[in-house]
Image 1 (cartoon, each protein chain N blue to C red):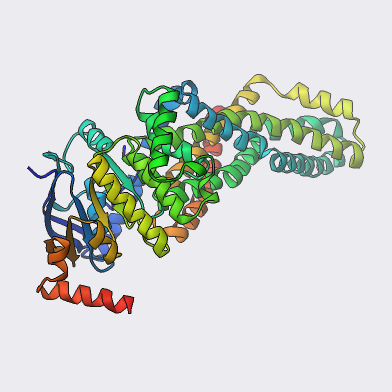
Image 2: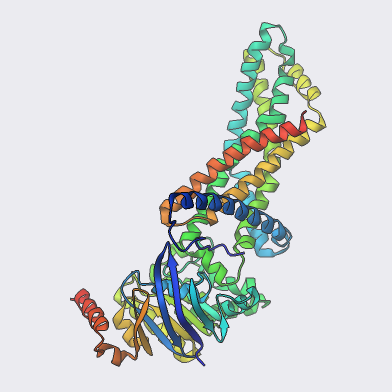
Length: 247
Length: 272
């Protein structure tokens, strides 16, 4: 059984369908990259998985539990399994990087301070951010903020991590670092990942499968090598546009 | 209770009449939402005091609400008392009744002007800051991040802010009354030739316990109103920097209006 399943999901805003019958699934331990033009509902798709949004119709399940209609207790359980990396990191401004990473442990577990410190140090080390532990979010770069957000997303040992444009606005070197981290976390910890990205090269490098979303529909979902050789006109058009951007 | 809310309707209104009714429903829904935020915040008050990290947030908010607003509140209440004394004193002098200046200033301050000016200062200085801060957190996905981590934004963000206003508003209202009375005394002595001791004796003789409690009650209600309005406006922020500006503006306007209306209602109930 798939770990995550979208079945014919429709989401309308002000009468306009942003998701229009979207269906796909994600296997345990898989990295799925969501690509597509801006405004096609990629981030909206991620928000449905943690019930920040609920579908107009259709069904979304995580490990067999219907996210949009489950009880608040079940939702808390699902959310405890999911780490979410927002575009801007979404770190609390008045807390240091280490305090931000420790926040979910302090608030939602009964761990001792020493255990929390240990886990925070390990999470920061895994994203190569130990040196910035005591700095405030405003004192570090955008890339470091994203890595801090990633450390917070994985510190509770989540088995699913959702990445909302993890490399947008970053320089190529930092983008490669972030992509390498996503792959490393997937390989070493077996984390199932969904990555919303405009970085096609990054997606080809890290993803097990790539899903192209256009106008709220899943156009093609295939392995990277199949995706780049796809004969689907929408995929060819998307790839051509991406190449055009690079040129 | 979810803070990251979706629009009530997925579709656009079919007619203007439907749009009008939707506006009314939206308004009533906002009132209900603010009431729920207040009730859940009150439910979390004990945990704010008991939990170490929430307590440190509470102390920070007490400092912001109580100490950082002191300069503004001091100046406002001092001049409120001075203006009251000058206006009333000039009229009293026409009837050779300057000896009642202290009583007139004190009764105006303790019943109305002290809680009112304190409420206005808190709405402008603290309420606006709360709405802007929470609004910025909302548009930067920080509130959504808390929800995903299963940390209640109401417990973590709203409760300490509202509780700080509940603690501080009556204290600051009382402080306003004292400073205003002193300001009135300064005008009485320097411009109207009233003896300061006589002024203070007149002021103290008129103030009774009921006036003090009604004044403190007003300040307390204003504190709750400012906290609830600013938190719910902040949490209701949408669409980037423009949304933050709009929420901040609306929190100040709504707080001002409610302070005026509730001030009148409390007076109407307590002084028949």
